[in-house]
Length: 258
Image 1 (cartoon, rainbow, N blue to C red):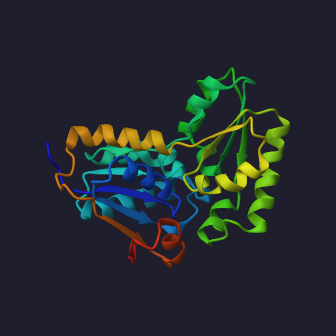
Image 2: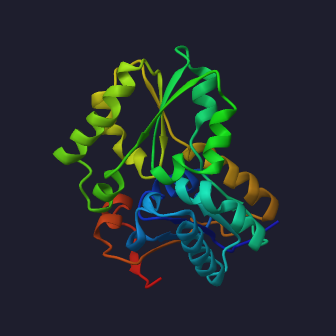
């Protein structure tokens, strides 16, 4: 079965490109459209109604661009809005939520850490997920300021490293052996995080699992029949330089007022 329509992906900025990269690596022949809603980043500091409204706006735009499925490449949008999106639209949605299960299942110390936005940690879906593993101690930490620094191109800044030290050292002291990254922006911080964490602490994010789930959906609705590589379109509603630096100069980023 062939279906040459693109896969739509949206996030509250550039972070969801970590998910796009996993999807593109797994299915390089698929066409993709990526929306970076950087104008409204971070979603994690907004209330649920605002997050739902922004998610609907992004979905409507991707549907107008004829996408065959939509990946909500934002933990905050998934945990707060994906149930609403699935109730409103017939198109398949793939969400992203913190990878608590593999961390809790494999933890030897029965203590794991999760670094996420306030919007994700406060969400009903996150609470439901964490309650399934009540025998594991979960150290929650809100990553205030991290998304803003990433969106401003300050990945390797001293301010970023200081914030990460502030957030991670209490987790280390609590004897975690897994750190769950609960925001699609945070995989870009792994090099800095690895400088702070002891080598025995493993870092988990959801990117690979989301890509595999996306492939499962595409198998049902049809792969791109183009024998050559897929076409990717990137759209942002702010300046494009940070997004261009993240994805590489071989891709073109277009401004779109959404």
